[in-house]
Structures are given as C-alpha cells and as structure tokens.
Amino acid sequence: MPETSTHTDPNAPIIAEFRAHNGRVGGMFEGVTLVLITTAGRHTGKPWTTPVVAERDGDRWLVFASNAGGPRDPHWYLNLVANPQVTMEIGTDEGRVKPFAARAVPLTGDERDHQWDLQCTRNPAFRDYAAATTRTIPVVALHPLDLTGDPARARLIAEQLIRHHEDLRTEIDQVRRRFEHALAGEPVPDAPDNDTDDPDDPAHRLRRHCLTFCRHLQLHHIREDGAFSAFEREYPELVPAITRLRAEHAVVERALAAFAALLERAAGPDRGPDAEPAHLRAEFEAVSAGLEEHFAYEEAHLLPALRG
Image 1 (cartoon, helix red, strand yellow):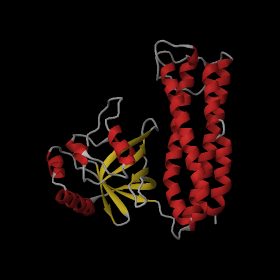
Image 2 (cartoon, one colour):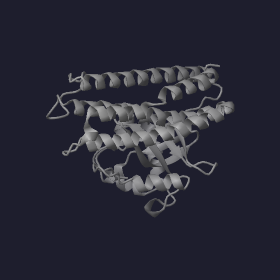
Image 3 (cartoon, one colour):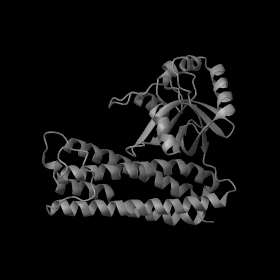
Image 4 (cartoon, rainbow, N blue to C red):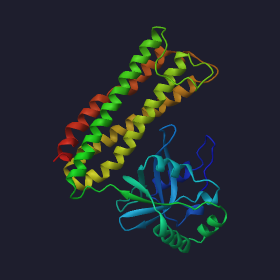
C-alpha cells in the first residue's frame, strides 16, 4: 500500500480494524493476509506502525515492499534496513492480535526471485506493481524471536534489557539536568542548533529533548511487548509478571501520548503558561514517576529466568 507524507496517518483505520478483529480487515484488503510491523524511524527514532501484505513461510513471515508500484522503496523498508529489529503483530488462535519481536532479513538472488514469483502467482496485483516501477521490489523475511532451547540467546536478551534500562535511566537524569539549566536561565546543553530559527530558546530545546526521550521509551516498550510473547512461551511461570508489565506499559503509553501532545501544543505560535520550563518539568516528572519501580520489578522478575 502506498505511503504518504501527510501528518494524518492514512493507515490508522486499517491498524485499528486489524487489532480489533484479530488480524482481519474488510474493504479492499478483505481476505488478504496482513501483518503490522513497527520499525524505528531511521532519522527520528520514532516508532512507525504499518500494515503490510504478508505470507507465512514456515517459521518466518515474508513481506513485500511494493509501495503499490511507487518509484521509491517504502519508508518502513528503509527503516528496517537501517535497524532490522522490528515488532510484528499478527492474529492468533487465542482470538486476539499479539506482538512478536522479529529480525528482518531482506532476501537476495534466487531466493528473492522465487518468493516474489510465488507472491505474484498468489496475488497478480503484484505483477502490476512490478510493471509500474523500475526498481526491484524487495522481499523481506521476518524471523520471530524464538528462545526454545536457546539459553545463550536468553542470557544475551537479559543483558540487552539491562543496558536499555540503564540508557533510559541516564536519559531521564540528563533531561532533569537540562531542566535545571533552563530554570536557572542557562543555555540548555547538547541540543542540535539546526532544528529551529531560535536555537537558544530553552523551551524549544527542552521540548526536543523530552520528545526524544518519549520516543526512546515508547520504542523500548513496544519491543519489550514483542519479546514478552517469546518469554511467555519459554517461561510460562513468568506470565503473571509479564501481565503486570504489559498493563504498566499501557499506562505509560497513555502518559507519553498526553505529554507529547502537550509538547506539540507548547511549540505553537501562541505559547501559553504550559510552554514554560517549570510546567514542562512538572509534567515530565509525572510521566517518569514510577518508571524506576517498573524497571526494578522487571529486572527482579525476568532476569533470573532469562539468565538461567
């Protein structure tokens, strides 16, 4: 499906219908196998969720970067080339869509050509897409995370989890220090100067840093939710802890969305009191409240199992 550069996501209704009906959608995609993939924006780090046509192939899933025959590769494909760690959502026998952590691998050579020909046979519209563009349409294999009988990989994931938590803890401390600079009337450090015509505006710099933190935390939780599906299969004793962590992720997601909306409003031409650093700091503390408890609970309950 083609992608656009508009601020309103044209895929939002499809995503909502997919999640509400266990991976099934109507309209032009009725009867078509879709998956949702969430990639990290290669320039912004922002999570992007896109519905894509897919085909299951054994333990992996194949997706096709047709962009409806457009002249350029779709953004989701460029994102996963830059960072192959993705989260895919599929309908399940449990009657609900579930996320799965996956590794994206573009196919090459004869394997790519074979899988592309099979897809064109299944869905002749893909031949039309290929005829409409001069580029070779990529075919990507998504390999869901599987921890079955692989304690070394589980231990590696445990260490990655710790590193991500430490990075987020450091980022929280850095944002707090930047608030202190702004409230003291000092320049806010380490901000890019090419984002605005007024690079010394403390409120602008704080908004940029806060938005970056929001994106990093949101992407971390999206990826964790995908990894949790593999944890639940391999370590069923972790299900109660994971259920709590998923619920906490949902609470944090709502808080992040509200805070990001505040930051966007504060960047408008008519700045009100909510654009002031003191107000933004209070809202940031409200968002970050409880995160350390959340991190500590996750580490205490998941790491022993992952480390064996």
